[in-house]
Image: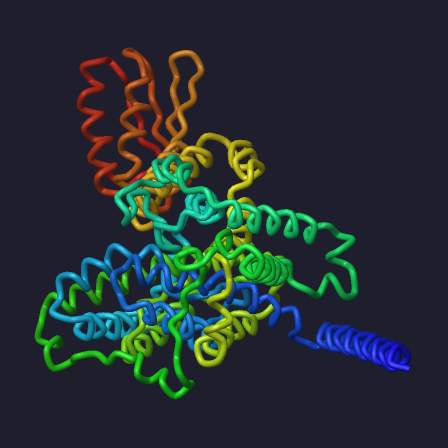
Length: 536
């Protein structure tokens, strides 16, 4: 009789499990049919990427850990709502780490530093209102591609130690010289003495899952295709570590190897984590205003660069309004400064994760901010079960997509004028930091643009001893080196015609240069004729 009762219970339990599975599948199918389901799930993926980076950047900046979370939440909810970009995602930026750290260390208190963050937001709003976003049009595409490839390479190099269980350097530290006294390359050598088998296994399994999830058979599956690969990787990481913890606790990973989100006893305690700006001791300090302006300039440049890069990742090829982006970033920084957060910018790592996950609208950026908020309020205990090696698997795949070999091959096929600034930008960011590398890249890119423009603006042709120097477009003082080079090619005893018909504007410096050449030409028996130019 007892066996019959037990058998009936088993059948009832199996039936209940089948019903539960059917309900879950139905729920997933219903969610898949929602208008913004793709964006919400993309937001979940970005949230998983952003969570450790928010904490890591706060640690690397010398700020309270919660400051990074606040900045991440504001980057999603505030900047995401105001921005006109469908793909870009904002949050605390590694590119500002050195500036933030120096500011915190040099000022009397963190509350005084928050005044600089608040003021930087006001500066950015002004930049947007006066249409300062036009500056984005001057970024060479080679520099943008170099920045994306460099960030991808940095992600790979920085995440390899986390993947193997060596977590001394904080997540989000993108500088070549690290806080733990090592550099990006020496860290790879040092980690060999601290490899953790469990962390390595979790990461390796995660990469395999992500590769499989990139297969069209899975991505197009009505059920499996809706489950984000990164979410599955994180779930498997938690499950594997918990099973190991129950059966072989000495082999489980814990402590620094896990996400460490601050725990709140209840949701209302979040206000205790807020820090408020000390205006009374800051507004009359010139150092605060200089720091605020520096943050505003650097954050604006990084945001505009990331915006340009995000537009290139958008499968629908939409163009985001740069002035609106500056206003959105400014609004985010004013609010972040008012409640204790770090400065925010548009961030290419989050944006790339967003695009890869299939986002189509800015709902994903807003959703990622909402997930960050909910995790702090209600889920911190469960978030702290996530192994960093599982998240490393996600970031490694993102890094590979940003810096694949095909990217280098494509840029090389565009010629030296494109490949050289691309490569220099890549190496400069890789071996310094994002801020220094971007400025080096912009300077190099500007040099090659000017060099190319100068050479195309001036053309020298000849037939026998008759030479023709043509200005194909407007010429300025920047063209003087090329003009001198071309004039030096004219041999003694020749006849030279300098034709300015196609140039609507000729700089006074250029006219002086031509006058000087005319005087020297007499001693070389060169006949010079000026055609369609202003009188010299």
